[in-house]
Image (cartoon, rainbow, N blue to C red; front, side, top):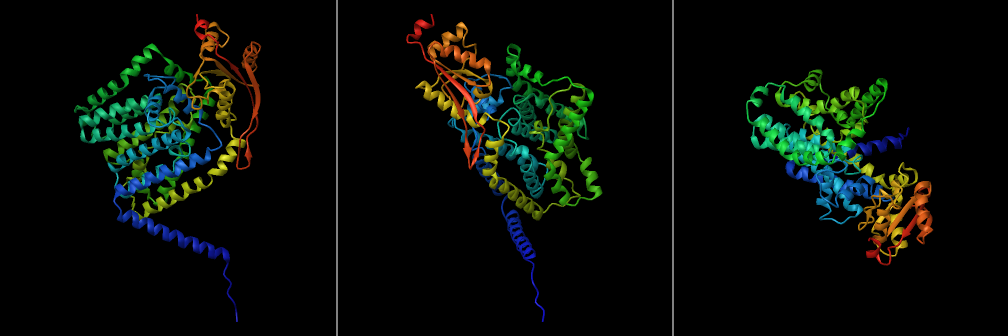
Length: 516
C-alpha cells in the first residue's frame, strides 16, 4: 500500500492559480457586461483613491515638496509668467481658492491632475480604438510610473500631461474631420501646454511634422483647419509672450539648462534618455507581448497603412526622439523624467493594429494586473515612508513644518517676514501662510526697515556660515535666538538630526517712525 503525499508548495500554487482564474473571470464579466462609462469612472475613481492613500501614507514622514511650496508662492499673485511659464501657478491659484493650504489638498491636486489626463486620454483612445483596446491602453498607461509613482509633485513637468493629451485629441479630430472648432482647440491647448513648460515645443514640432505626412496632407492644408489651429495657438500664448518681453525670468531659466559637455558625454546622455524612456513603458510593452503579435502585426505597428495611425506614430515618436537629437547639437540637462506628458498615444501605436486581437479577457486580465501592482505599492507605502525619512536624499524635507512651528513659537505671534538658508526656507511657504520671503539683504537699509515694520525670522543651517553671521549680528542687538537639532521619526525610522539656528528680530515699538 502506498501513500501519496502532496507537496504544500504545489497546493499553494494550485490555490493561487484558482483564485487568479476566479478573479480574472469576475473581471472579464465586469468588462463584458458593464457600460464603458461605468467602467472608466470606476477605474478612475479607484486610481484616485488608491494613489491618494499611497501619497498620504508614503509621505507621512515628510512635508510638502519644495516645488509645490514654490508654486504656492506664485499663487499669491496672478501673473502671465514666473520662474517657469505660468500654468502651474494658475492651477494652484484656482485649486487653493477652493481648498485649504494643507498637504492633503496638494496631494489631491497632484492625483487629480493625472486622473483628468487619463480621462482625456480615454476620449482620445476611443476615437481610434474599440472598447477593449481602449481599456487595455488606459490600464497600460496607469502602469507607467510617470502617471502616478513618479508624479509626486505638480510642477512644470506634470502640469503638461492633461494639456498635451487634449492637444492630441483635438489635433487628430481636426486632421480627420477638418472641423474649425477642433482645430482652434488643438492650437489653444498646444499653447496651454507651452504655458506649462517650454518642453512642449517638441509637441509643436511633432504636430507640424504630422501635418506634412500621410495621404490626408493636401486635404488638410486646403481646409481652414491649420489656420484656425494657428489662431488658437497665437491667442492662447500671446499674453505670455507680452509678459516675456518685459520679464524674461522663465526664458532665463530655460536657458540655464543648457550646458557645455564633450560630444561623448552628450551622446551618452542622449542614449540614456532613450533607454530610460523605453524603461518607463516596459509594462505596456509586456502587455503587447502577451497578445502574441505576429511579424506582420509588428510590421503594421512600426509603420501602419492608414492615415490615423500614421499620424499617431509621428505625434508620439517625433516629440519623444527629437529631444535626444537636439541634445547632440545643443547639449542641455536631459532626463527621461521629462517625458511625463509624451505617452498618451502609446496605446494607439501599440494596440490599434487590426492584426492583433484584444478581447474582453485581455482587458480584464490587464485590469487584474494593474490592480495587483498598485495594491502592492500601496501596501508597501508605510515602509516607503520610513525609508524616506531615515535614508531619503532630501534631508530637509522632514523638517519644514517643525521649523515653521518653532519660528512661530519663538516669535510669539504669526511670522510675517522670513529669510535664511535657501535649502530650508524653500519649504516654509505652506507652513507660514501669512509670511513672505525678504527679498533683500537683512542688513541692508531696506531690509532693516522692512524687519522693523514686520519683524523678521532668520532661519539658518548651522553649516551656513554666512547666514549665521547675519543671525548673530541681529542677536547682538537683542534678537532672540535658538539653536536646535531637529529629528523626525516614523514607525521606528528616524531621520538624521538637522541643526538649525533660528533668530527672531522683533518689530520696532514704533514701526511707523522706523520706516521714515
